[in-house]
Image (tube, rainbow, N blue to C red; front, side, top):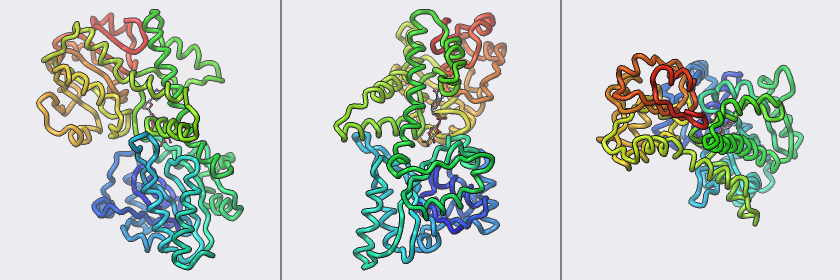
Length: 442
Ligand code: UGA
């Protein structure tokens, strides 16, 4: 099928690559000329396992192209995805400017029926706004009779496993009231709907709300566990034992109940805030979500508090080795990363950071630039040299096995602050370390 994707960010690029690999002819449109030029040269702006070879192969076999020319894009695609950003406004609500600008662009150039598919995470009611925008422009062009549909098709991919998630989705949500749209979408997704039925067709508003409800439910699980961890701390219980204890109940499940130093990334923080804001606009108060958000903000300070307390309130001049900058493993994304709150808090108190991350070093440099209290180290070992303690902020695979002997030799004192509960407290203590983690006795 001929598909156009507006927006070459995380969602748009991955979706385009996966659809092109499945044999569709996909045109990617973005207003960022530099980005399009780089993509044409095979430079992928994000780190995502499997994406680069997939893009290169589809570009080479002619199934995937990149352009800034919206008119060509609109003409090309019978199905047109809107996958542009919805950054939070000042009040936390999703800013729909980009989404509606694309809707207007589509209506400005379309000359035959188009299926407009909303992939961006957008508040309930956005499809109606997209529809109204398209109608207004078509009417202005004297094409009021031209048919189109606006379909909600939210994305559930996770950073770090985006390609795999997109190729093997748990579910494919299609929000539309039109039979023809349903059929087109079923045809498009047929290669991804093997083995068992994954397509769920529903009304547009339910599809839009499903996306927020999914992310907010997951964020709630995490904040709930973080709250339990804080209680475990006080009573001397072990949150990891509690996690196994409750996860074994299939009604709770094992996933997303790991306590830590808070959730980050571009999705959970933004979506929780946006749903709170939507509820407020409706005259409701989203009390559970407000608590989820507030627990997460506090949780990002959890390890900094422990560190500062360990040094009796004075970390001035102390040097910390920091392992992990990305908000989670397998990505270079530092948006809303707990590591940032941690570093900024320690900098405020006069400490210095020697950081290492397998992928996010450039991103860290881009965010913080050159500063005396930050040293980006080439290896995890280099970060340890002479540091007063090791802090683990992201659970990268390569941090999981600790060479305790080497670490002890490199650090000036055997102290580990583990924000992701990666190690066995008993074993670490036996090796002579002072070990702090989240919600476990130390
Ligand atoms: C999330 C959702 O998981 C995806 O389903 C969704 O499609 C995506 O948002 C989106 O809306 O685009 P993502 O933000 O990539 O995906 O990352 P997650 O793997 O969900 O992790 C989010 C954060 O939660 C990370 O900071 C992670 O460290 C934290 N987390 C996760 C915990 O603290 N504990 C857990 O048990 C699980």
